[in-house]
Length: 602
Image 1 (cartoon, one colour):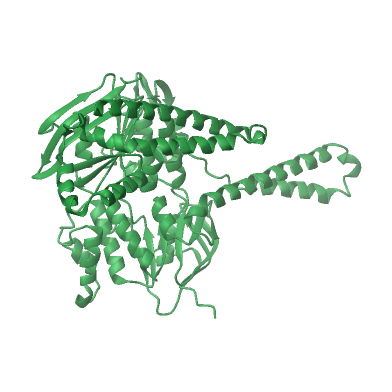
Image 2 (cartoon, rainbow, N blue to C red):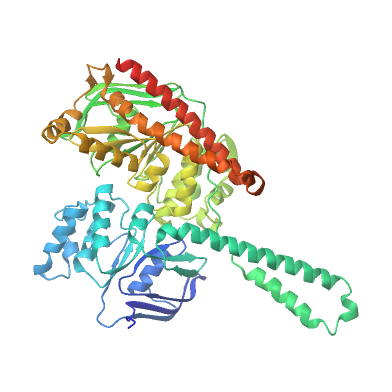
């Protein structure tokens, strides 16, 4: 027997500022649904959730909720007026006997219910809103970017909770790993149309690409038919004017159909330009010890960053990741230890707080008032990677329209602010990129482009992120900051770090594990081998890295052995060739590094 839907939208239409957001939108959310809601920044994802929650009234159509069903909505920027603490807000409207649920969720999400709402950060306020929603336990949860500003530990806790619930939910997130783990269906907003696929997010990109491919094919057929009919109209229409008016009208209808097609939004035309090459050695840090506000950030930490490295810093919020990066860049003095910066460093920084943006000024003013971007005598131009460019033209490359150029930055969405900051960052040449939480609020397509740009960037990248998939795709080394001054270096990205950590813990004898944990954070050098702690760990990790590279090279070799690949898929062949050369260079470097460390170890 079919179950009644939890929620149903019927022929919804909604217009903002004269432009339609949705027209004739109908969809159903069933009991137990786990739905990913995806789409480009500005496509209307948050608006659709608000329509589902009854917070936005559509211009026409009906929103039907099952009798006795409660719908809970977690908003991105909760209003907490009238509440003294985060706990007061999270437990508001609940029976006192149920308030324990807030404390349980607060422990998992790691925020303090006693914190004053007036001094709480945006991330803390968002976690309080999520705790309120989960404690209320509605029949349907609508979650708008719940993982933003969360550390990986809290994200994994939330992931476990949602994986075990029987409650239906609709989820907006940019975190691929989170979406892949949780969703079983996908709603895709594209140009005002909402499509549904009964598969989780891990199948979304294949579905999207096939949809676009089919569209392009249909558009090609339509254009070809219009050309054929137009040629017929020119050749001898006067002799058949009366009896062929119907065919002429059909040609007009074809042209009208083509005009009515909504052009899909392209990807931002982002680009990174490397400045002058830095020296081979970028940063050499030895024996770093630092305490801040009575808390140990690192103790005896060592790191050797070479040109071209991609270093990810991971760990709980507040553990000191940003402080460590500032220390490595020479902006913060260590209590002990030395830091030597390489030569010719040109550093560009993406700040998670977005302090580089003046929210009260327009997009135009934010770019033209930046001294590093100013063009002498030209108030409407900015310097972009050494070349003058018109402000509007440059902003259009980052998907801003002319109507936004003179608007204040505060009017932008979170994703748009992130794109604007990337526009400032990418205008200047650099050879060291520091990216502090760059993935927050960006849509999947922009994340893909950023990842590709970082892969091609001929410089060094230092990255702080809680996006596990993004770290896996970008990082060659991961620094795990685990608290109490313990910072451990692992080869590879997030998944590699998890595997290596599990192997180390599994191989350590039970009676020595506690002692090893205490000693690892303080050991600076292994006198018996002549290697530092970081070098010793690197020597242990390199065989696995070399084996992985050899396996990838073998797979690429098998792919390129197909004689039809070059003739039938030249673009794919070129990408495979480039990937093979890149991995061979990395393999050569890894083998050389292993030999040097092995020799040094004696």
